[in-house]
Amino acid sequence: MTPSTTHLGRAKIGQLLAAIGSKHAPDQSSPDAASYDWRDPHYFNADHQGRLAQALGQVAARMAEILTRARNSAFEVSLKVLTQHYAGDFCHRMELDRDYCLTFAPDKGPPCGFVSIAPQTTSAWVTWLLGDADSTHDLNQALSPLEESLLGDLLTSVLEAFLAPLQAQHNLRPAGPVCQGQPNLQYELTEEIARVVFQVKSADSGQPGEIAFVLPCSRLAALAGKTATAAPAKVTPQELSHALMEHLQQVPVTVRITLASTTLTFQEILDLGPGDILLLDKPVDGTAELIVNGRTVFRGRPAQSQGQYAAVILESETAGQQTTTAKAPK
Image 1 (tube, helix red, strand yellow):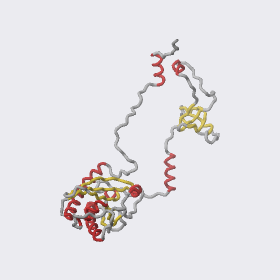
Image 2: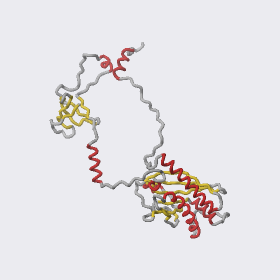
Image 3: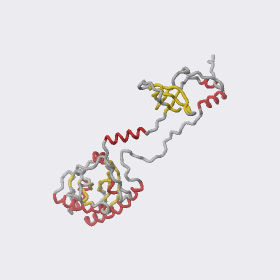
Image 4: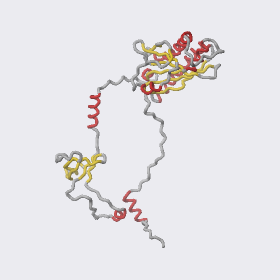
């Protein structure tokens, strides 16, 4: 025996779709979008970075000339990467315990940046600076005073080549001596920091080295064609709290007023027509609900004011206080 089955006819399905609407589901495919990391600053946009790459390409050429004269062998220097960081996060992630660094600073003021080379690059440079091509410096062994002096002179020349295009806006100079380990620089935690890395390769060596420069993004602003902005004035927590409260008080909030509701089956919805009466779940003298963000916050009664629907507030859902003075248009 076959069980009986009730099927909706085409007409009934059309009525149902007309009642509840028939819209295509939104396309859930992910649109193509550029990667954007909110944890890193975006002090320089794509146009700024393009200008910086062009200017730093000229810096790389000057560095190659300096290294070529020092080594008496051709060098190739190219910009490898330019990244932006917040100082608090960047300083926390830096691992420079074995790197050799040389700081730089304005004429009046503490150091604001530094140049660093990794142990492998240090070993290669010290070896050819000493002119001993048959030996290699031990990475775990500290430099001798002579080696530090030779490396410091070379790093100073390379650093001056990097700082040369910045001298028109910032009078920066090396603030040696060269030392091993992370230099002691004072940055604000939210200050934008740029890290510029160049790849250095000798014509007679297949192993490239790297040299990195770290400095505030603001020092590169003019070179990137960006107008440096003054640091915002510091505000007290009380001033910030007052400003936030004033802003919040002006934020628009949508209030929805609901008289009553009822529940129907699909068949009852399909059977509705002009002239039918729906019974709701409240008596005629029942209150209306004023809903904010999905939550009932006031109760009142329907009214009219200046030709518009309105509601007279009778009580607060949260405080339970009686009032008849406020009116909210529907």
